[in-house]
Image 1 (cartoon, rainbow, N blue to C red):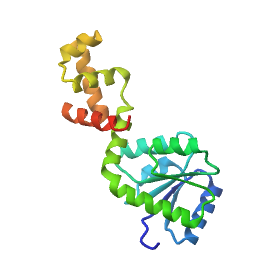
Image 2: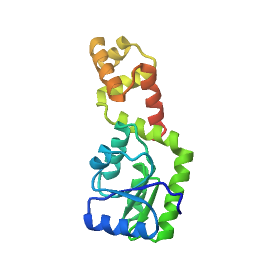
Image 3: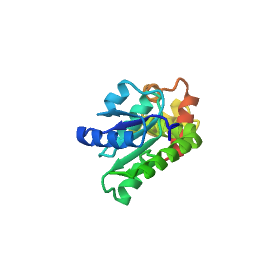
Length: 200
């Protein structure tokens, strides 16, 4: 398994992080442990697969940090005795795979190999979907309505008439919407909306 990319471990429990790191070193998998997503986001590794302990909100926080930093890593979630529902939710939140801790070495190696190959296949498409969705989620309801109008080819005046607001207010929402999406032009905002639709 010497060709494996780094495994980036994110787990707030010092004890479990040590156990997981030890198990991985036994399997000769190079691991970079991080206590928090914020710590990881302050110094992204150049490449690797993220293995994150699945706690409430952890995956969506990780995905939004990756989106904000234009980073993307394949993600494997793990927890003790995960239920089928929890696994499904993690996959919907952006994990490519899920393993139960404590893991069997072979099972983890297979999950890493799957994540790497699926990251290769899905890579850019999946990355764009996740980034787009996390950007769209930052918009207010009104900004989303303006984006819908723009995507529908409506002028500011028409959007304003439909939403019962002035064209000037539409312009302000439109500027905020472009800013939050990290888009320079309306066409870019529409592309992000289309990419996000692939997921929603």
